[in-house]
Length: 164
Image (cartoon, rainbow, N blue to C red; front, side, top):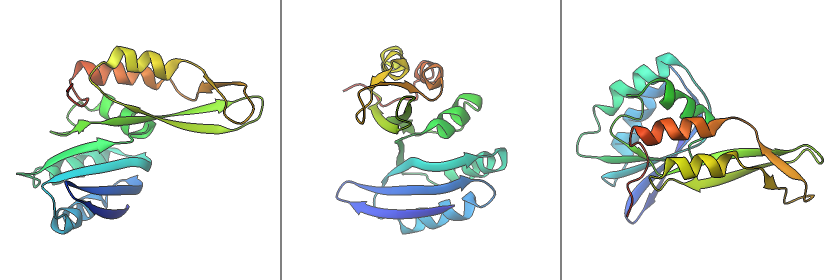
């Protein structure tokens, strides 16, 4: 797992790149040491795969993040699937945004759309499951997975960003 850390005035943003597997505990320890803010946002858009060893190590390593608020942003299908299967996986953090990939059959393009999570999982699921107009050719772009079902499950567990 590679990661990139970017300090912002009110948070540390950590871009996670690659697989969450047996090497994640070491990466999370390095991130915890390097982060300057007590608020950490994990950018999950470039996670490629998550396995059970990675989830177990993640959950163990996050116990060391005491006194730190953490969130998950741009959560892709791999992250959502893991969080649905293992309710403890998001730990104490909450999901502030998710991504959905849409494929346009006529032109073959793929578009990634980011949806903010405002606590209304039912609306989010309905939006994610609707076809979109392809920006490239104007055709119908369909969601590439049934990720909306996962949104509803996570919403029931109060995993999404609290309403303002």
